[in-house]
Length: 61
Image 1 (cartoon, rainbow, N blue to C red):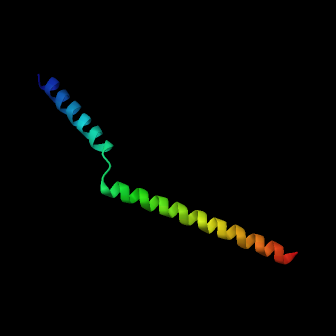
Image 2: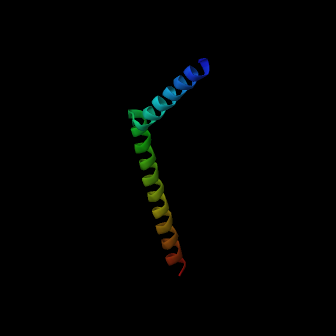
Image 3: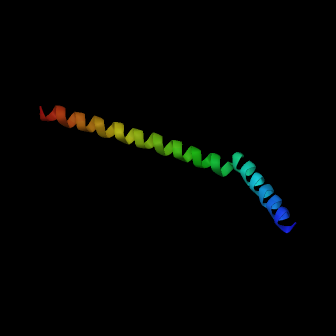
């Protein structure tokens, strides 16, 4: 009896835990926006580095 009750409680907590993970909170949205901004900055830096490298190559010739 105790084992069945404990199993039911654990199963319920597991289901509640999974359903809570599906909801996106403000912190998660902010984190995603920060990730996107960091990716955009990284792409901008990479593009600028490529342009500088191209300009240096042109200057050498």
